[in-house]
Image 1 (cartoon, one colour):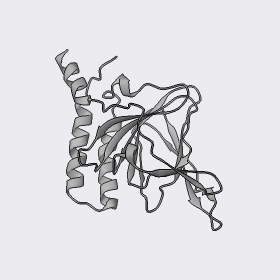
Image 2 (tube, one colour):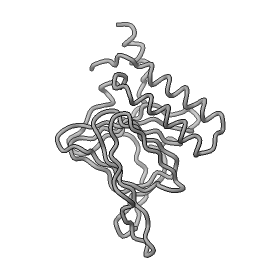
Image 3 (cartoon, rainbow, N blue to C red):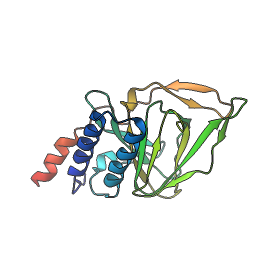
Image 4 (cartoon, rainbow, N blue to C red):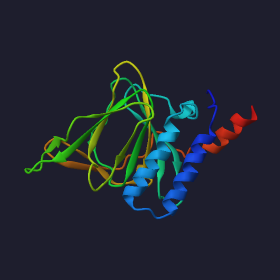
Length: 202
């Protein structure tokens, strides 16, 4: 495994985000300021260990990088193999998506008057350094896909809960939903701190 050159970037982001959440900002301010913090993190592609950046040929990977001890937020790396995509789904908590490597499309959906789901505007293309904010009050339903059919893409997602334990839904185009709990591709809690110490000792 290749060790990251600057693992302290993730530690700094987690600390700054925890301080922001402790300040009891409203959601709009949290998403605005948290988005800037995430933008600073994903502008540099030199901190994510290979262990949390490995694609799977059959489905996208969702690796837990950090779960707040009080369940206030989680940080996850999403690793997209060529052409991979999610189903249409929601989150039911606030979220931030920061593009680290490659590119992805985020297509929003909204309910029509008859309850069906329809695309809401054009898909947003996220490039490295770009951040998209999600709120359960306005744009919570979307579908995400790798923008490339021939390369891996990686994005960093931050959620206002331990997202792997949140009951939420995937949707059919007719608007029907199926509840699910996603869990994580890494069933154990990763110890980023030990990886960082190992890197610093070299």
